[in-house]
Image 1 (cartoon, rainbow over the protein chains, first blue to last red):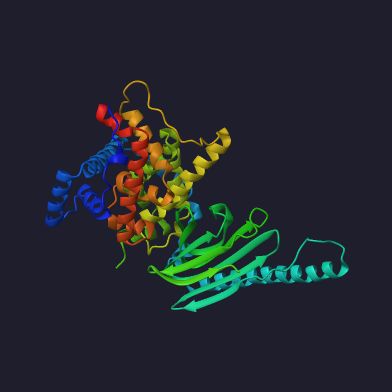
Image 2: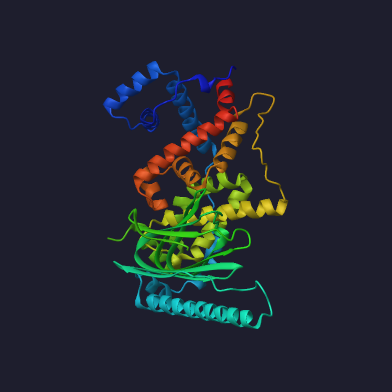
Length: 258
Length: 184
């Protein structure tokens, strides 16, 4: 079959693409239906685009239908029944309340503890740097770099970011305590941040990996969450981390490393 | 008012383990299909689906009833499936194919080889696009349900699906998928 030369065909306008996509979704208004018919009658590129999308839609639907229905319920239930001892109602029931006192207490205790550890490490590294420089025993080992520390509190959402910087490693610890769901988008200016750079330290709530585009990772968070972003600076020392927090599609805070 | 699934989960945690079967029966097929498309092997998908439901049961106390149960188990399933693929690749020490060239079989491809091309192309999509394709076509969710599952507005889901279909179509044009379909 001859191949179609797409380069010689006129491009389809984005608004026309939208109409074709809506046609595929069977969600065209009467007015759009008219526009669609006109488009198909006059543009070969639109006809090809529509035909391809329709084929794609049908292929996806038939592929899905060809997957045989399964029933693993007997096997799953027999495995699950052997594990029911782990679930004790008196313990778990209390955790169904949204952010109870015990959860808050544990979250703050964890935040305090991690903060203390990071603070001590930062102090130790800063002190070590001076000692090494004064004594001139080593060169180029550790030096203190400007670190980022930041606090945000508004409308029941608390975010705290603490950073530890050395020439070898960057660790950013993020503490979140929020009653509403917030989105956290993490990106690097030069190097890509992957889920390997992220370690969840504590979670009483939700910390869901939402998506990973080419440039950023995104998590959906609620409750009390503590996670760390760690990257070595050997690969790209100039890479600057950027954290963007948003709630209901509105950016509430954006932090970019100095 | 409490959602029906929230009551079921509370009952399971309170000791009525049998009620977990309601959730298993309701979600095993959409979860299995999504896993199957990612791991691309029936037996692996079968084992993983069972593991996901057992793991989900074990972590039921971590479930936040503010969100749909499917949303939670879907994320667990995706993470498990992606982790499985990553481990399998590492284990088999398969080098990543860099030129992404595909060749159709010499004979006219049957639906199996077309599905294979489709699966490969879906798995090449960025995670955000792959999610909407899998949820729409393999888990059979509406835009509203997809928005709930991914924690995104319905409008974003719709435009993401449009982009995903467009990118997928471009990929399929490059590998002569449409020629193969039309030939049959």
